[in-house]
Length: 390
Ligand code: GAF
Image (cartoon, rainbow, N blue to C red):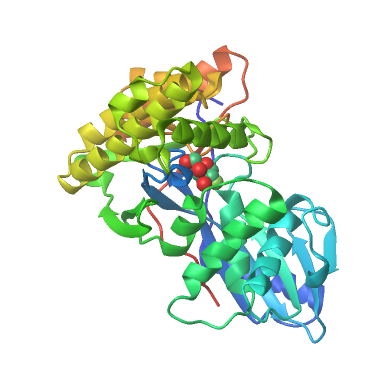
């Protein structure tokens, strides 16, 4: 094949219908509800959430789907269409070491909701995850947020904030991934056709128009298929280095530091990490201004500068991501960068729509030349937030 492999999001209503049927086959009754929560690509602002900076993600049309039914006892059963085994357990027995794999996310969210005072009932859950795994597209947060919605907690105006907190707590305390909260927030609060600006210094959120087609462009998401994990230590290392740099600079979080102070740091590693954070935060501000002015060429330039910063200063890229970025730019993209946690996963490219095929073929050829597996490609219209489907 000369083109990357497409990963289709599927039709939400058809997926929900099929999941209801799978639930009925397993449990001899219809589910009480079917819920979905999206994956994401972050347009710009990487590793800024836990550094008190700004991020600008969009939600993907690719989502995680959960069918849930109340039980009369307080057992929880979890079946995923992507796994062989069924898990069965009691929430009061969940601890960081008692659950592993994808079940840690599911049981972790239910545990965290209980810890927050919600009366989570016994549940049967059947899950269909349609966000590619380990691709830096936030399959974990999609799973967490869809399970949180499916957990049968009452709806109130502030409940989504509490669900997001519970999802983060599950990820940090039960799964052991020290992540920063961007992914859960975009899954819970995305608006179609918009990116979500989140300022982690103030916790303010604001929709920003995202319409590359208005400038004759498309956003290409290319999954290198180099799997990454947020709990393998490398992500946590960046987080500790950031804390050490903030401490050396005498600031509460790194995004507050001045560029001059950063350049005066003695330690080369800490100086690089801090430089990424302060320059990236400034790029997010510039990208928002450019988007509000409809200037997608400038957005592209900022993407490419962001990639260089992640490659050279934050040092979270890898050869495959660098090759996607360089090849896309050489084939006519106006900007490209890795997205998400890094060390593998996906890159995004802003491409004049009449060059999409050219860029896709060039990336596929560059991977084939190096003997690497063909990357995957996703379409990424900015999609909506987690919701109940039936
Ligand atoms: C991962 C984390 F989960 C997020 O919190 C964020 O830090 C991101 O990496 C990097 O921007 O997706």
